[in-house]
Length: 269
Image (cartoon, rainbow, N blue to C red):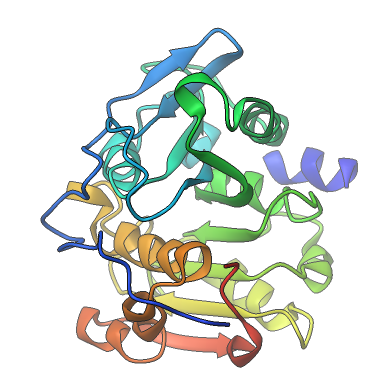
């Protein structure tokens, strides 16, 4: 695992009452601005602005930035919006920070979430449900969490393994790929990794011909953000509408899709 990290850094479903228009509207908890915590240096934290427990407790999203960059605000439009649906999101890198991040910094985010869940302003956080995701180099950081038993599922956004190409054959956690089509610099690596997954590893891979990163930097993270929220709402909150997105709903958004053992995937509820 250590060598992988080093090299890489070059079901029952029920309707949820909280889902609104994922592209234009925020969720009921209010769009979050990033903040920091003295217990987690060099990270940006997006916490729902309301303490309401409507819709259940708040699962955790740990995020890696494109280029493994150190600005935890680089995807604030997506992460702040995601928090509004009842998620604690933690990005590697301070708000407005610089420099580089590492896979170990994402692990620090997981350590922190597990430590503070159920306490103080994190009283509503559920650290038994953790999604490790990231864009480009940040996606490689997310894949490096594949062996962490505390992580439930992985998101790979316009990313693929850079070296140690056989690592994908060891991935066992459910994995979501959102790729920008053949014009995405990560396309070939993502396609290769998807094909290498073990036979019983559930995976959904969508390509949208928007290039590297797609519309992730648009309002609310665009369709690249929308597909991640659906994934979370299905797996962590058992939302029936979101589950259906991965069999039918994606067509309206133009995704070209391949799936892998998806029929074996059940919500973590």
